[in-house]
Length: 263
Image (cartoon, helix red, strand yellow):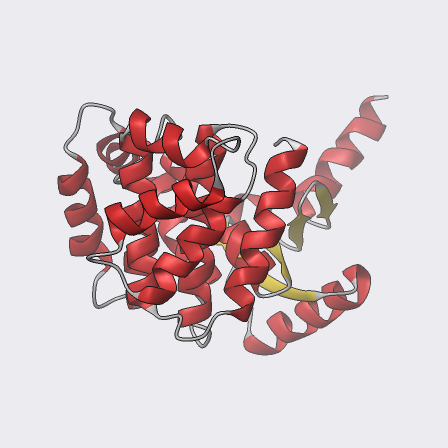
């Protein structure tokens, strides 16, 4: 990510924080805008052309999206296009990130990270599903409809919107990569850090609370905990926070013991 894009994201995130009336309709419109800009080289070039006058880029936003999108969406898109982006692709990524953040704001009472993680595990455990959603030749609308059919009524409307929108325009990215990025964006929007814990059996509520409290103290921030059940670790647990891995599993201790005995 170039320095220009980093600065542009900072400005657009601040604009979202200052905006009022952010709901799932706004998030949906931002996803639609990302798809439109990503699908049109002419539109992306016009909106990412920083040397062009700001008024000209604002007019493009108003002409293309003004007749159908809410005023708050147009205001956010105008802010996005006023920034200098390192590339047209970064501009599309920026609009998509803004859409995910808007969904997070609109569904602040929903465990959006957890629901995205559950679908990510479903994809991981079902290669055929990952292939169907990630295929470059499949119909994008059909992919979106498949996601809706699978999780509507089981997960929140925000999760359905985010996943069904992301699979419509993968831009060469794998589905799990899209979901991982979305989880990271939501966690950042909510000022949290994601911890993935692997255990041999489901944690009790009390165990989850103790672990989250311990990790929060260690990392100095609120923790969003995702759990993976893996009987092969035998007992104990393995925790990963970003690149930091804490392996207190029985399988790891046995492997260490075997290595010492062999050496």
